[in-house]
Image (cartoon, rainbow, N blue to C red; front, side, top):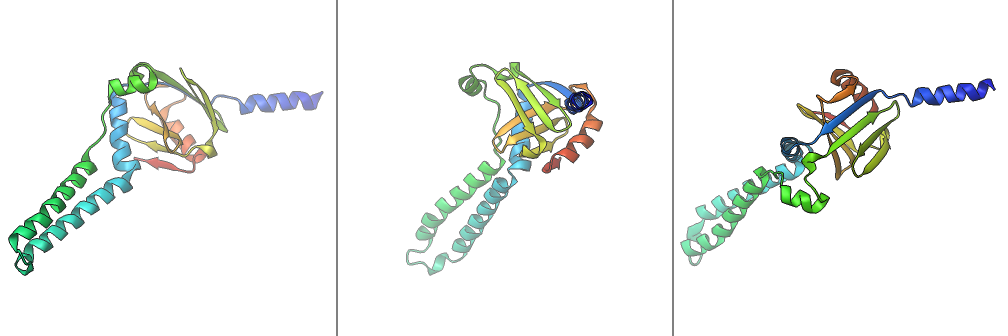
Length: 193
C-alpha cells in the first residue's frame, strides 16, 4: 500500500508545472522571427550568398582588366561580364532580402490570420507541452531540435522546420529570468542571441 502511494506522489511531483506561458502571435513577432532566422539560424545561406557575389564580382573585375586579350576585345568582355555582374547583384539582394508576414499566404496555409492565434506553453521537469488551436504537442527536452533566444522572444524548434514563437513577457507561472536558466540546462542546443 505504501509503495502505491509513493509512486502516485512521485508521478505527481514529476507532473508539477515549472513554467507556463501563453503567447499571442503578432505581425511584428512573425517578421522579427523571419529576420532572426535569416541572419542567425540560417546564417550559412546568408554567408554563402555573400561569398558567391564577392567571387563573381572579382571574376568580373578580372575579365575587365584583361579585355585587350580577347579576339573581339571589349564587346566580348561586356558579353561575359554583364551576366556575371547581374548574378552577383542577384546574390547580394537575395542575401539581404528578408521574408515578411503575408496575411493572404497565411490564410491559405492555416485557413485564417495566424496573428489571431495563441499558443500555451507548459514546461514540466522533463518535457514541454505546446497547445494551440491545432492540437497539443508534447516533447521531452532532449527531442527538441533547438531553442534560440532573441531580445523579446524564444524560438522553440520542435524540428528544424517546426517553430513556435514564445514571448518573454507572457509568463503566467514563473518568470523569464528563472526560465532562461531552467531551459538552458534542459536543452542541448540552446542559442542565445
